[in-house]
Amino acid sequence: MKISGLLRHIDTFAPFSLAEEWDNPGLLVGNYDDDIKRIGVCLDVVSEAVIEAEELGCNVIVAHHPLIFRPVKNITDQTEQGRTILEAIRRNISIIAAHTNWDKATGGVNDTLAALLRLKNVEALDGFGAWGVLSPRMKIKHFAEYVKSSWGLSRLDIYTKNRPSAISCVALCGGSGGEFWQSAKSIGADIYITADMKYHEISDAVNEGMTIALCNHGDMERASISQLAVKLEGCGIETVIIDVKALPQILRI
Image (cartoon, rainbow, N blue to C red; front, side):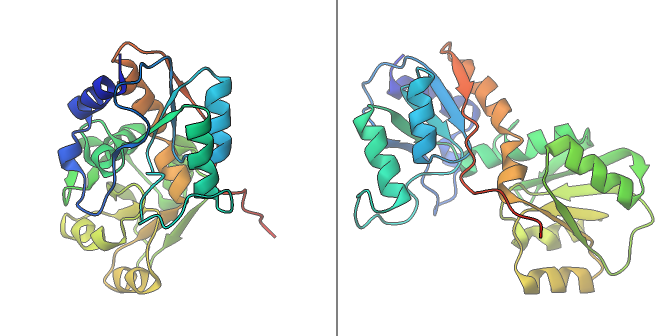
């Protein structure tokens, strides 16, 4: 299969038409006519991921976060982005991104997160996130531990003014979903889980009675990478996960 064929395959389960206008999915580095040997899948493309991809025999990387997102003024070895692009070109490794199209796809980021929590009657939240019913209901402390364990989180910070007696209706949005807390409130969610929210968004949400749970952006979305690998392997090409974290470990002092 060629790169162009892989892009068509991705379009079958995470249509590029679903991507937000500001997003940059698709082929970012490489040639459409190159043959694929093996596919590496990761959350973020950094130079270490490119090197590991070559060691694993991969000549294509499919990442969730686009390597090229904002306008690029130069490509040099003085920046991590530049080093990564240069390494990819030097090693003849193509780079593809499946970002907001994978977020919103059926079976994508948010559906995977909901499935890992075993939520029932799952529906889309404002076209981006997801919500469903937790059964049986859980005390908030037990629910927090359940989420951390189910998603492999390093942390889960809960903000609440009126502590819910139990958690039943759960709304979530993988990654940066601060603007969707009102949608979570409108469907009667007991808690809204996402990764990035501004101070005033948290304040407004909590003061309006919404309980908010925030986790690490990478941890939250990394939970869907294995499912992305399964979808990619459907094209008939061997696929492996490249588990290189773009951010260093957080020190708890």
